[in-house]
Length: 314
Ligand SMILES: Cc1cc2nc3c(=O)[nH]c(=O)nc-3n(C[C@H](O)[C@H](O)[C@H](O)COP(=O)(O)O)c2cc1C
Image 1 (cartoon, rainbow, N blue to C red):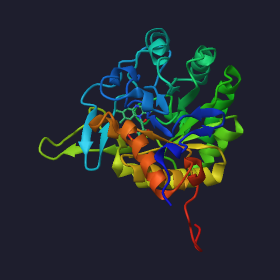
Image 2: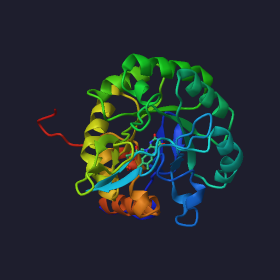
Image 3: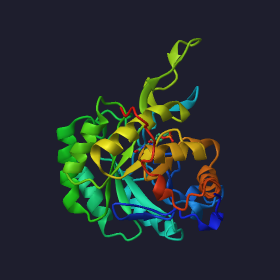
Image 4: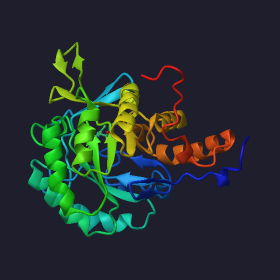
């Protein structure tokens, strides 16, 4: 039976990270947040995940580094960013004007660099959690090497854990045989939350010029094309690891959000959809409220992991 939309509770909590609603921007698809203030109402976001930040500013890979594909896009940005100090000095104070929880996405070339980044932001009250990018397919060293090997990932999380009291989110790669194995390694080393997935390694060629569309030849596929892959990984990881999960991958609609929640996600990040419609998160928050009200669901938390498998669980 339908209920009043104002009676729907969208708040979620993941390992002590409280979000007013389960929708966040995904790293690298929404800059540092403030740039989009004129295009959407940032106050509607449950959380903002920053572009990946490193100790020093990075220029990223050479262009072309974005290519549209059917149902998605390939990118090879290569973690271009302003560096942690410029973020803390120039961006973070402005984000304090919004209720959205700020999550910094961190990237380093060594365990020590990740630990120094986490330590740098530990005392800053404007930052609610850190997300470790161990799964970027677009850099030659660092990042991905940690996210593809359980021992390396475990050592990385163990190095970061003592430097911060903030929740640690480990962002999983889809480009491995067993994301659950990586998730378990992260959990055992002290991670609090998992986010899944980063982009799927892909490639595109222009048949007329016979050249790859990206200067780096290969890149990371994102958008609706990867949603079924993300859904499978979120489902497996939520059941197989036992940490709260933030889902990422091709989310565009309220149905997409609900599918990820039913698969086991407590929150959902939106990435590529923001390129076409920067107000996607704002629309989804309102749409989710209306949908749950229509379905008579009082709290989104009731639906987490609620997929009905009938008599044939996998
Ligand atoms: C242009 C672009 C830049 C990205 N940069 C980052 C990044 O800096 N750090 C990171 O962890 N993920 C990065 N990602 C991955 C996204 O956060 C997200 O995991 C992925 O795009 C899948 O979600 P989507 O299909 O909703 O875009 C980037 C994705 C895109 C498209």
